Length: 198
Image 1 (cartoon, one colour):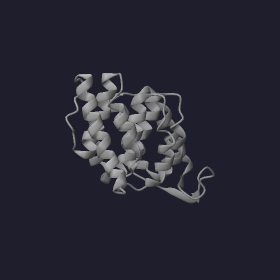
Image 2: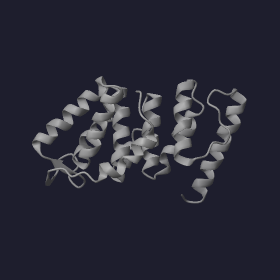
Image 3: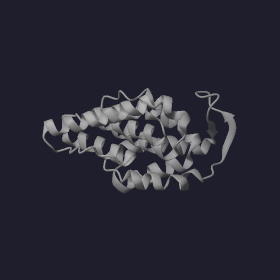
């Protein structure tokens, strides 16, 4: 998926959070204690938009993701269900959308999907978890620095750099020995984070 900078995505989060949506106060059957249910017409739009994620790219995809993020809470149960979709593009896009919505109640569901079989999807899910202030996503991103695919190493490194503003000398296209040293520093950083109770 050719996605825009996560900095841009995070920047529009405040705008997204300010959006208002007509909803029923009755909770969904799937999440009886969590999320407001969308009005019927909005449910249909949400489902259609999620279905279309697998076929979209570039600006069209991004506009669709922004709209789903703007809908916000009523879309969450449908988005969480979509984390099991057969299309990796859909799963990755949904993780990105949930990162825009930033509802921390979705973190346990996201953590449950950190074992996604497709590496870029794993890293998108991990990034979203960290964006919401939970450190559970960092191990997947640090592991991604050792991915055999240079594109996946790049994605994992860019996410860590954005989240922490740290680098530790890692070069995604560097020599294996150099990368191993940097990965060790990343792991030490994370271990220290855990030891300090963060």
